[in-house]
Length: 123
Image (cartoon, rainbow, N blue to C red; front, side, top):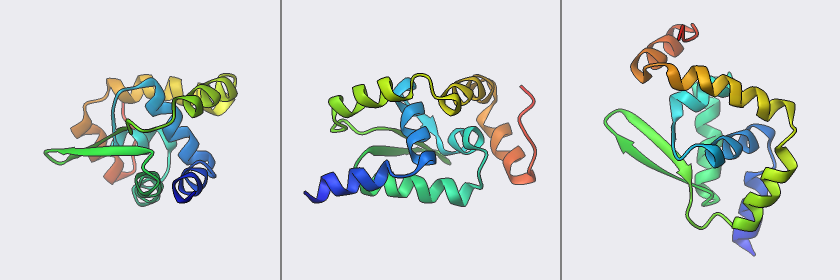
């Protein structure tokens, strides 16, 4: 029951749901890419990611100074299907898809530098 409660809490926030939706469409995204997509402070995104990690909904790996996130292998397939069906016409998710096109075209080093300065990627 505890894992079900943790997953429910993990999805009980719109920004965390947006992260999960993005990860369902991309194998991996780094924290800076998710931060840019959400348009939130890095600390806020980090907190959301830690909740998803604690719920075992996502996994991460470090590569150099980058931390990449992906859906956990044990993320229930039925839940993924339900989320895809439920979020397909969401304006927020559609906007995130468009935003990620620009974000993914950005060099991660440039993206990280710009985030520290409060600017946006110019890609």
